[in-house]
Every structure is written in structure tokens, then in C-alpha cells.
Length: 106
Image (cartoon, rainbow, N blue to C red):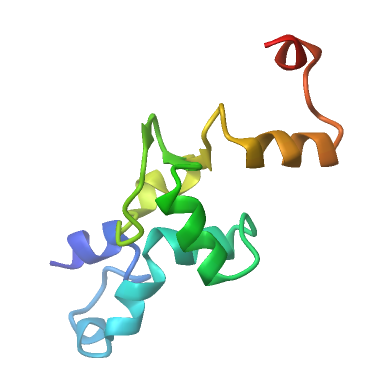
């Protein structure tokens, strides 16, 4: 149980079952994809994050995700990115002046 909860990112230590007693529903809500988008500063607030996910602008690993209720485990948290064809990704790259010339031609 502790391994599973730690893998989901709900508890920080695997030492004792006492941490399971203090586990709340808010801990599960904080592991949802829109909450992590706000935490990673990919969205300004939760409403925008839910909209981005529902419109298909976000992918987790190689898969595009359109379900905002997705619980993201620790192992996959580092692979949350924009979809390659997303207009939001293009705007972010333009703002940071990191857009490649090859992308302009396509």
C-alpha cells in the first residue's frame, strides 16, 4: 500500500502506515492533471488548465490527454508537455524566442 501511494505521489515517505491515516481527499485532487499544470506554471489558474486539457493541448508522455480527471503518478510527472501542433506551444516558444526556423516553414 505504501509503495502504491508513494508511486502516485500521495505520501512522501514509505516508512510507516501512520501517514495513511492523515491522507485526505485533497491529496488526490492535487495529483490531477490540471492541478499539476498550475503547479508547473503551464496555466494561470485551474479553470484555464481544465480548458487546455479538454481541448487537447496537453500530452503526458506520448499520449494526448483530454480527461482532466487523470491522476498523474510521480514517474510520469516529468513528461507533461504541450502537444507539438498546439497553438499554445507555439505562442510560448515565440514569447521565449526559442521557436525553430524549421517550425515556421511547416
